[in-house]
Length: 390
Image (tube, rainbow, N blue to C red):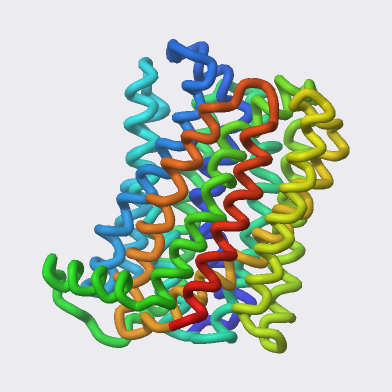
């Protein structure tokens, strides 16, 4: 068993591969749209949402596979698929080929994202798992802080294809680290069976605590998907921040990381559910107030007001992600691999369609985006309350 000082950054980097694949691309979206002939301005958002689509499908393969062949082997297979997707995107000459490569990257990235949760659950449970996950998320958040700047820096010296080369290299490095340093944690191997997968999925859905907090994760994640797919347009088109976009994006991500780190210290004292309720209230109230004020500014509030609102929202989301994941996984210790897969699958299938719709409705104003944060906070709160009645 690795020491936490090495285990936490390894898991964080494994889980952050999907975030890196998202955020590093944001500065390049306009260039990709022009070079590959995207029909509409908002179509470039599919470069982001296609990745999430793959992440939603991938758990069905890698969760059960990790219970059958082990955690390490499953993650390494996923990394190989991710790298193949990068090669397709590098070689793309048409927009649909790019989207196909992004879906494949998402399928591959699902392995480190999902199986890493099982990797943690194999060794920790309850509040201690929430504590470890909070520290993981605190390290994880450095990726969205630096990824847009990395993408922007690459664009200054090369074209957007070089970003995929960088993603390919990162995946290779983290795969080698996992191979050489992380022991296998799977306590016992289960046969790979479609019947077992269905049985486990039914168990997740029928276990109210797991299912309710999975729905809460989906509600919290949906407007986050919308924000990620529209961030470049919001900051560079609506607010005209130009090359300062990575600075604003990274600064907002910092609030996510700080609250994740704080949660690691608070959760042992106050518990996962209480902190989740407080976070959901913060997200709902701050978004609703800002949404109401937006009407006074014809849909585009001052940048400082928008940033202040997002700082509160992302701070709340930073508390939610680690705690809701731990709450959903708590009753699933005997099927951690498949359980993590189903939790990720359901929450993603809730979040991605809703987030894609919200993002595609972007029209230069922030009515829809801010309103979606308020509604998602309310949905998260309702799901937590339902789960508390198990």
